[in-house]
Length: 414
Image 1 (cartoon, helix red, strand yellow):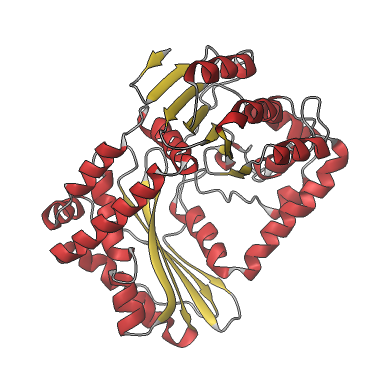
Image 2: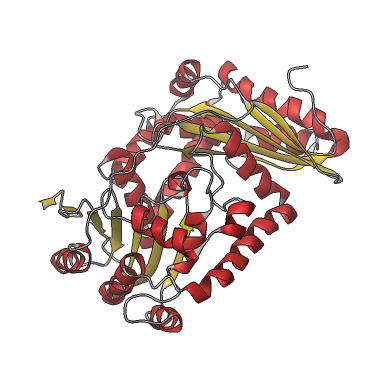
């Protein structure tokens, strides 16, 4: 065990799980984020969707608790909770009073280590997963993000976290049990805790709850091929959805905050370029924005615009124009607004145990250390028009992946 500072603590278990904690003064809550390397990218070849099914099935009874008892006991602790399948990880999140933290971890230790995985619940879990997949057809904005990731990021990192219909429909209980035994393992897992904590008590509890969890096989991911750079999905509708993605630096890169500054100038509120130029001045679309995403070794900016069919081509052209125009100059006022937005997010993160546990987990996964808020604020303060432009000259927006969804294919680069 190594004490990182007066506020941050780290403890690595013999089986490969790492506990990272931040003690926050002035709060009575505590939150944890548990990342297990069992995301969609680890689903077996041609069987994308097993992780999506397991994310629900593990709550259908665990340890000495029935399915109903798991839900009741979690609710009795007043937990705000959630779980989800990401590209690399299956994540579990919960926030509660600090006095209830250990009791919550005891239940989650059973959920991730000793789930019942009842055969009788598989069809119910399957039905819910298929409903979620079907819901994408009614949410074209979400659908285009899912499909765009699959084309931009190399396989298996771009696999849809909601799964594939054929797999969701055909998955057997045996292969779900086998996949859980294979992928849900402590080696490489991260348990990040933030808030009102007693470090020695927390460390000892985690050792007791997770220390005898046997390590499994070290699973490796190898980037494969990517999808088409330009693609179109036919859909008879009155609107066209446009997705654009391009590479930037990953989270762990020293220029991460410069990349974030550039994205915030592009799409950081009602004064940002995309909102002002594409939506307000030209009235081309009802929604347009961009966001930053990162895999371990690849960062990306993902942009979206939703518009009418009649104005779709112009919307695509103008949006691409605004993205590439970033390299030709940024005003000091734009940087000041971007800094204000980034600092506001930082302040809110520092006041929320939930946000901090998530940030601590991300920092440890990507950096193998936890950044203090003062360090991040200093990086934001150092942003300037020149530093962002120099960053964009080194990593210019180019080699776009463009996906459209609507009744008509658009012209790219015409």
